[in-house]
Image 1 (tube, one colour):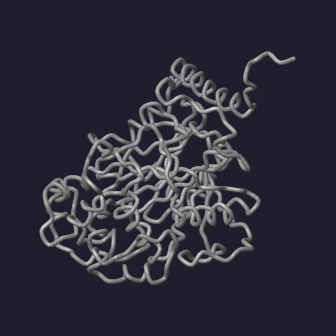
Image 2 (cartoon, helix red, strand yellow):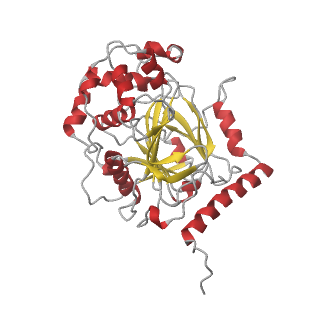
Image 3 (spheres, rainbow, N blue to C red):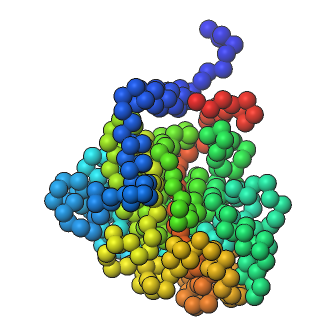
Length: 397
């Protein structure tokens, strides 16, 4: 019998139920004990200095012996290996035993691809039609970037780039309402889509039909943090989240689906990839601190010598005067053409020139880049298969 009401797909009910479950979890957690926040505050603390001895360093075999992490092995990939990464069979991969599906890949990048991705994040991804935290600015990022790379960059362009905090790609996330809006999207970068799809296939298997549909690029500074949260705005809450880190080492926390669960903390370093799949997909996670380049906890061989963890990088004290870092002159970045959406050997090779790489190296020396990529829709489905929240009337739960 026709009731005259629109039939609501089961996937929408599932999405609503997941959000309600998260709300209820938060309520219960407040009644119990918020161990997640307790750990976050302890690791964020500056005075007295936080004790980081409990932070997992997967390069130290003691954490495997203690049963905190276990080494896992990549899947067999039948497709062509990614030209910018070391062979997937050689990747060093670890899974947290307390959070199944939380997987760390220790820097699978070759230096050329690493430089290319960093250059994209600073020079191309912030351009229209992508959305940044400078959403109300009338300035063109292309003009800002070219001015920044000139012989005499203006204070305006220096300030603009210093204050860049995030960029969204593909479906643009509404930070206020915590939702995606159907009409608010741009084409997802093909290079980043290909990269993350290869990573998923190599780690979780080619049967996982992952499709990159949204991304948030975060630009962390030396004193930046990211508070505890879950990512639950996507229609598909089973597809993995892919997180790629460049620059300074950070302390990353991940717990369970309730803040009552005591989280684990681990170091994420330059070039590391972190995957949140299975149980980890809906887990609370956070970044309580970014480490200084000279931290005693960074007692390891840098993946990219001469770039990030070297004595000629500005100290935290120097970075308090950010203009010193930005005022070094470097014009050659004007001739780097990053417009292509496909990886190009010629394009990547252009960054081998020290002058061409200089502006990106300076920007990265004082902070950290994180590229977080997610799938929005269930496999085989698209935007027309869902009832979307109204942009102006939606009440976030």
